[in-house]
Amino acid sequence: MHTGYPADPRVTAGTIALAAVALLIGGAFAGLILEATRNPTGAASTFDSYLFRVARFTLWQALLSTLLSVVPALFVARALSRHPRFFGRGLILQLFAVPLALPAIVAALGILALYGRAGYFAGVLTAIGGQGWPGIYGLSGILVAHVFFNLPLATRLFLEALATVPADQWRLASQLGMGARPAFRLIEWPTLRAALPGVAGLVFMLCITSFTIVLTLGGGPRATTLEVAIYQALRFDFDPARAVTLTLLQIALTFIVVLALVRLGANTVGDTNLPVAPRRYLSAGTAETVLNAASIVLALLFVADGVGAKPHQCKY
Image (cartoon, rainbow, N blue to C red; front, side, top):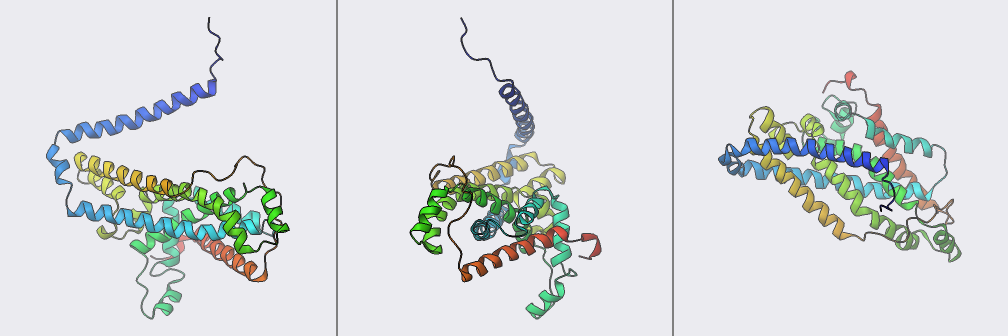
């Protein structure tokens, strides 16, 4: 006699959808592998100096993009958490969600309109550098675009993590007269440290698999990533063996780095199911308020410039 609970239709539908996606991806990849086996020498010839240079640049730009996105996001998220109520805070958080919905090609052209050789800031950058502004193609353009997309994302994720700190901890810190530094070291940093591997891993995967940004702002073969090399191998050379090798290498690099990031930090700190603190019991000093305001304003200007840029009005 069957006494089990009836199957949840939502779970069944999700399982079917997951199986369909896995079948689609697996079928496409299996077709590439079968095509590659027709020319086994092509896969072996892929391991040349060009491949290692592309892999090195892919890893380097992804690591730099992750570092430049995650580290500032820690300060911006902490500043927003320290000041939960001020005019425009909700608008800032809404603006930080815009890059997630912005097409990559639009963002890339907007960045060129701002920082290109004939961009809005070209005159200022030329005056600072003392010579003609060469433009932003290459590694610098890729980094700026990746930070534009991932800094707001990392900030929102860190801010959500800080929102899980129980109100009792802030109340106790206030009763003990705890300053900003001890509060960060004992309360905020453990929470941020627990969220750091996951956030950094997500940003790294987004950067290492970036395609449109690199293709638009790379500026030439010297700034080619594995994702672009896979596209070139299939679109221009139709070399499935090389494409499969590049794909496997990209998956391996991503897995190794993400595994290392996960092993660096604790999985959990405290109980994330505790209620969100309705208010903060520590008041920020003048110096801290100025630094927090500067962090928020700089991040806001950077994201707002990218969102508000009009590519069609500028020559690149």
